[in-house]
Length: 556
Image (cartoon, rainbow, N blue to C red):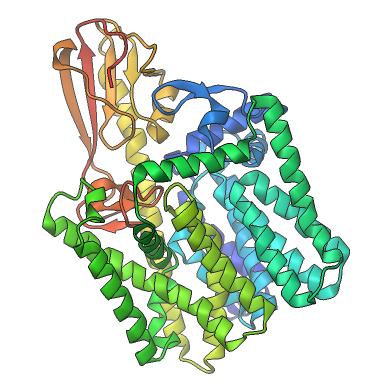
């Protein structure tokens, strides 16, 4: 019986991949909403009610009420996607995460289809994608990233088919998918130079294939014009300006940001590190790792880098974070080496250059262009990295299958542990909101809160109101709730507090994706330089205050 099942799975690789994706992602379908999820849920509900004006509402995301179009840095197509999902599956955590799972499955199947053009082991490439922590954590959000990546991967699939077969219909389909990737997340525009280079290298001259690149340019111009008419600003230009301004405020050097991006790459596509002994000659592997250790050690020892993270208070904490940072950066260097080695072996191969530019371009964007390094900005490289790993394994000739099984199993296990930790974090954030509101139920006053992300979503769902630092007025008997590990929170003056209480709720243990004291900043490296951090993870802390005096807002 088992042998028959195995034979069927081998004979139906796409069904096998769907089942494997369901097994890996299914346990997280009930994950509470967290971090930036609420922005996309609010956008989806607005798109459902007013599809002609997706950003036409106000949100309190930075401590004051602002128009949504000034807060979000993403286009609206993901909102329409989740609006459709909400109308079909419902607006619960399960329903919207199910829509995210469908997008993730599309990425896996697209990687398998694309890898068939590049190597003889497309299943290896697709499984490597599913075993990447970057992929598994991102697949369990209701943000725009996985939806964009689905459009991205299938745009490349249709592009390769169209260029290779001189099929104008497929090239046009690729152009439409590029436009949809852009309308889901602005980084989808990176497909334009990437596929233009591939087209020129493959065809050596301009031809009908250029039509596929004109479509997204026309959509870009139309989007700029429409958003200018609706909101008074072209939103693509506004997003670029935001990234530049925040980069300047944070003050990270390009070298520091690049090293962090390297660590996010190594930790996020960790199969390359686990399989390194079988992918590289000992001398080459030693040189890559040694060079990364020297660079990382010098950067961490300089002191300038770690000063950006005041939560890392002690030398022992900084040393522990530095060791993890250097380890994951070595893995990132090995991913870059996969791209460089592939180009070196196939100098005139347009597909090798496509994969290499895909990986290097994504890393460069995350480090040098985006407002901060985060897992979401590096997610687009995962399919290309999986394909490069499969090509490298295939190019090495016969190898021990046990080594491949070990590497993928170790990568998949780590990815599941990271995703489980991220799940536990979301659970404790929701629970902290519920506990805080339960403590406030003893009084008759209004429950106010500071902080945002998933905490905001559940506080508002429970009837609490977000503080507007400019206009909100708290009265005697009102309650004020502040989460410690959040943003835009300010403790009230002691003289206006009648009673204070601190709630400590245990969350993830020994591993986390999001905590300054653990150095983990998967969603924004301004919190920590690691994609996920091992070590002590502080409890989720929430302060609950009962006010004795009327105050015109909480002074910053």
